[in-house]
Length: 414
Image (cartoon, rainbow, N blue to C red; front, side):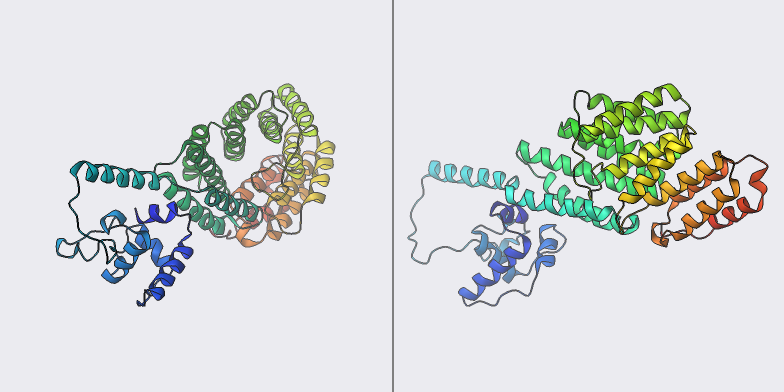
């Protein structure tokens, strides 16, 4: 209820503290020694302010301590009531008028609980977009903290009554943040919590009613079964995303087709994979890929990464190398693990082309070049795919043994 009063006025926690101090100075009172973090604890009910601070809060919001959600000892209730003008004349109040006024105040409090300004939502959107851009190059362990902090803010707003339009935006934000949390956990090899967070992301996207977002979450989710199995799950999710995107020439529609294509290719379904590849390329040529530096977009370099996976699984090394080279040229200096994934697929192509020693050397050097905090479980799994495609006799050779030893080195933080 304390937070609701602040949100009803469109104040941030820092602004509320500034107003509290200004009011105390104007009244000649001692300003409380508090800050935005302390106010957050008060709003969450984790700490209760001292009586002097509660009195100031009652003056600031022009309401009683009970209206702010504080536990009020009966003996102190009068001291914590909202201030009354000194020149007010006591007069009998008609019972009906009293009931009317009480009903109005109650309804105002109810509306305040769900009152989030457009400016607040826009600021939250901006913060989440900034996190999405950081995600492109920041190690997953560090990003989990950032993502969970933003999700906590969204959750705090979601638990209160909100207008329908605001609730839709909050569901969309939840879907985006939960998807990135699931992706970070997947990179770290924490598969069970990753699946659970993808469930949350999908539920939130479905709750929003946004078809584009529903398709995007499913296409993104297809990565988990693509890298860790079962492949049929990746095919199904890609197909669901493609059906949700039917009739739209969007980056999400291309993403869905590309996700289905590389899963079908790895599954060995050549004809269906080729059809999906053609569909993905046609859709991507006609769409706006969006922000190149947003983890929730589908830029050209990511499209080429998916095509690389499809061509590599189909054994079409020359086509795979071409898209790998195109993709690598598009990555900025500060980025995540995608360039390493492309190099590991180039190593798989070398193994297909009967260059096992070169394949193992490329895989090993690629793995070691990745900074330790990005060297997570998903890279190890993809590097082991290089060993899997080698002829059984070659797997006991020197190059394969060296790659195995490299992959046994300690990984980044989990």
